[in-house]
Image 1 (tube, rainbow, N blue to C red):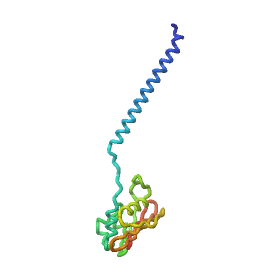
Image 2: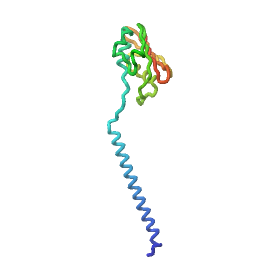
Image 3: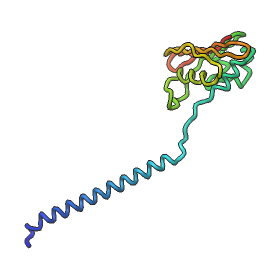
Image 4: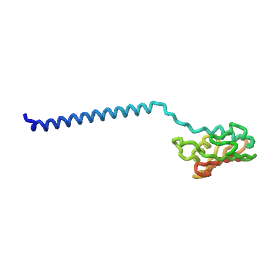
Length: 164
């Protein structure tokens, strides 16, 4: 048989080998991808948890004298420097700070984040105002009603005002 007659047979053989090699490479790549995906799912993911503001908020709302909160470490809101960022008088506590936390995967807006925290922290809370720049709550305790207002002051800058 001459080489001219064998050329189409050799071409088909070469094509079949190339296809099987591509299939083997594709299968190997798929197996490696599946293994990597499985390893990523089973490896513990280190996720930064947002700071819990409930203990500080509860301490501030239940305080008998807002002026004394400067000296109480339990009243320190995450990311707030008590001395520079908060003012207090007998009837109100007013803090300004820049939101440094990252989105927690559910909420991308710091105002919505602090609003959700306020709503979750207190069992007897009424959320009576919700706008893109301001959220207002009434927290009812056994002996009083406390007004809690969170508002936007600028790019990622928040204000929290608690008043009786």
